[in-house]
Length: 106
Image (cartoon, rainbow, N blue to C red; front, side, top):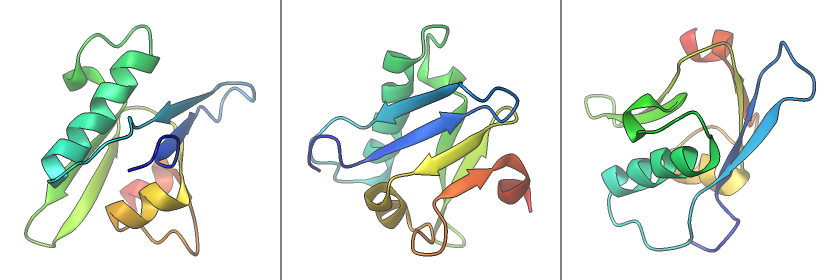
């Protein structure tokens, strides 16, 4: 993965000026577990009040029964995935790259 290609933006729809860019570190992620750990670690590095990968606002996990990635958001946030990250995670990046809490729970 190249530096700066895989990122997502966390937006709080209640505040117009509150967005945070979370960038995955460049490198090779051989398994989905390594990728999700990298995404969680990137949030810990970028968000001051998050001190553990277990307390990040956006969690990525694997649904092995359906062979899909699940994104769980801990509060009312909108998440915008970069096209590269959306493709790697299997999200429909061509039609849409922004996911808000209502969309994720639907």
